Length: 176
Image 1 (cartoon, rainbow, N blue to C red):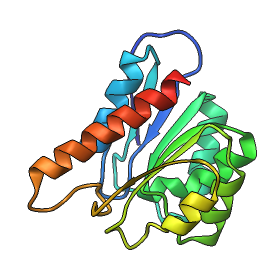
Image 2 (image 1 turned 120 degrees about the horizontal axis):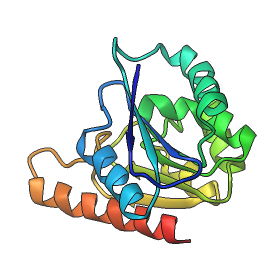
Image 3 (image 1 turned 90 degrees about the vertical axis):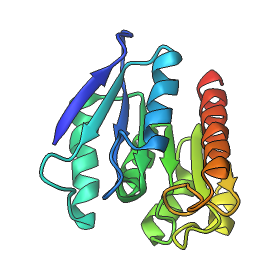
Image 4 (image 1 turned 180 degrees about the vertical axis):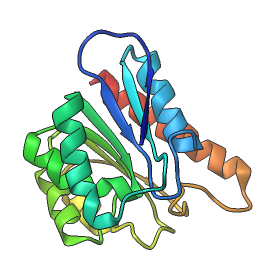
């Protein structure tokens, strides 16, 4: 794995974790990273050097990264949202993009996560559990018709509009 630092703010960084096939330079994670830097945060963005870990190895990886890097905020996409239980145990705020809420441990962790938690998912994503997301009593941004990449295939205008909604939600999240 490789970690790239952005922003020069002092203090604890925000840690940005990619998905299995969705790296930190893909549109949604790039947008969140940009919003973090604009908000004056230091960002550490992880990339897979030799491919992503197996799902069962993600919690240990997240635990290691949290111990080593001591972030103040976790941003994760899809596969790395399997680390939500670890972040919840540590009381860390987070932005969880397309969280794997269909996994019982992740779904339960969303409900006991830090009160400053943002869950983002699309209604066309089969892994998005809208009921569980809303019952978590955390901030939720649900994108009508968006898929697991938070996109609308064949509709770049709608995809761009939803990306702007994600940016606005992140900006609001960071301002609170």
